[in-house]
Structure formats: structure tokens, C-alpha cells
Amino acid sequence: MKPATILSVLALFLALAPTLTAAAGKPKRVKYVAPEGFSGHTWGDLRGSFDRLPAEPLGVGAAYILPHEKKSNFVCAISADGGCDFQKTLDSIYREYEGGGFYVLSEYTIPDQGFRMGNEKDGVVLHPVVYQFCANWRASIRKKAPPPNFDDINKFCGMRLEFKVETREDLAKLPMDHVTVYDRMVEQLVERFGQPAGYVRRGKVLIETKEGESESAFGRKFSIYRWCPAGGDGFHTDCKASVVLSIDPATGQGTVLYSAPTLWEFANARETNGHKGERLYKLLHARK
Image 1 (tube, rainbow, N blue to C red):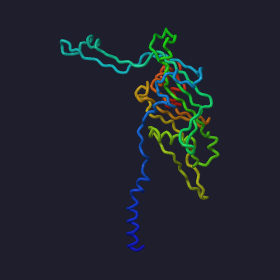
Image 2: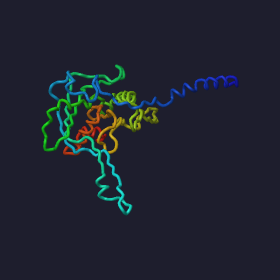
Image 3: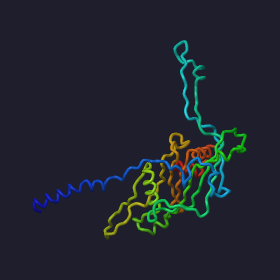
Image 4: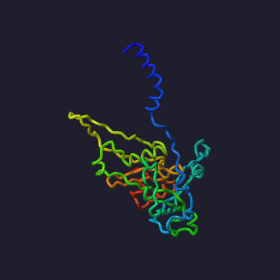
């Protein structure tokens, strides 16, 4: 190649370098913003404001838990010998609590109602969609009757969105570069809510055989992803709502769960008092 030609190619490469770098760079980072609600309703809306839901729920669950200690502090009362006076310091302890008491979760669905997340080509059909309502009130565990103002405290607290994915049996018959429904759902959620912890972009590893064919080195992996889960002891999320994506590749069942803090508290109460290993708690905490 002539020197002049080399210089021309180099100049062209340098001119295209910013474009090439931008195209090969990482995808745009999206900051997590919690969903405000669903289908025109916001978290905390009363059950009575949902005029299209059937009168009878799909199911109802109840739980009880003692108030949850949020934080505590104390003041050291100086004694005559310069140390802390034990009794006065003990008397100064202040504890702040949250939640606790009775929780009731009720779920409703509108027959044949479905939604699409994303466009017609790359989107995912959600059906059924389940509306969740939480009621919470403080009372002695002996007083199990619901309060007279139950309708005023029964509030919108979550959405369970179901969708169908390819089973492992289905995937065995498909090429490894097939974009699954799960792949499309992950991309929709990442585009909307940003990357969850432990996020890995879809990809594959190929090995060239002696015959020149390519075969997969690894089977497909499916992860449970969570956006703004509960921190610390897991009592509830600190966001307006968290998002969880989970699938069962054996049955082809996928779930996206939007959950406000009260739904987390209900699941925590169930797990703590007599319903260990319940599906809702396991889903929220990404446990199998």
C-alpha cells in the first residue's frame, strides 16, 4: 500500500473512531425509578376505587406480626463516679417501631384482561394480571375480627404479572441464538428500570468442532432479577415499589411482581408466623 493511501485510510479511521467507540460502548445507564402503580391506579388507592374488579377475590391471606423495631437510641446519664448511671440510662432508651399488627392480602383479576410490555414485535404479553390489596391495622392478636373501617385501609399494594416462556423441552428443539420470551422480558425491564444487581447481558459461547460445525459450550441460564429489594433484615423495600422477575423453565411460567412496602411486610409476617417457605416471600427474596 502506498504511503498516501495509508494516510488516507488512517484519516478515515480517526474520523470514524468516535462513532465506532459510541456504538461499541456500554448500553445507556438507566436509574431505577419505581413504578407509581399500574393501569392508571397508584399504590395506596383504595380497593373501592377499582370499579372493574370482580366482587369476589381470587384468594385472601392473613398474617400477624409484632411491631418491627426500626431503630433505638439512648442517652448516657452521667453518675457521680463519672460513668453511666445504669437505671437512668435504661430509662432513656427510645425505640422507634414500624408496621406490625394484622395484615390481610386479597388478590383480584379481570377475566381475559391482558397487557403487552413493549411493542408488537419485541414485547411480551402479560396474562393473567393480578391486582393485590393490603390492609394493615394494629390490634391485639386476640382480637382477630377486622376493624369496622376495613374498606378505608384496604389499599392497592402490588401487581403480579404472569407470562409464558419457552420450557427447557421447547428450548432443546430451538437454535441457541433463538431470542426467548425471557430474553425479551429482561430487555424490556432493563430498558424501563435500569440494570438490576448481578445483571448479565444475553450471550453464548461457541466451540468450533473438527467438522467445522459450531455447538454450544453451555446450556442457557435464567436468573431471578430484583430492582430495589428490601435491605437489612428484609422487612420492606425503601422504594415506592420494587420489581422482581422470576421464571420456572420447567413449566414455562414467568412472573413480574411489582410490590409496595406493605406487600413485603405481609410476606415477612407470613414467613415469621407459621407459613415458612411461602411462594410470595421466596419470590421477593429470590429464594428457590
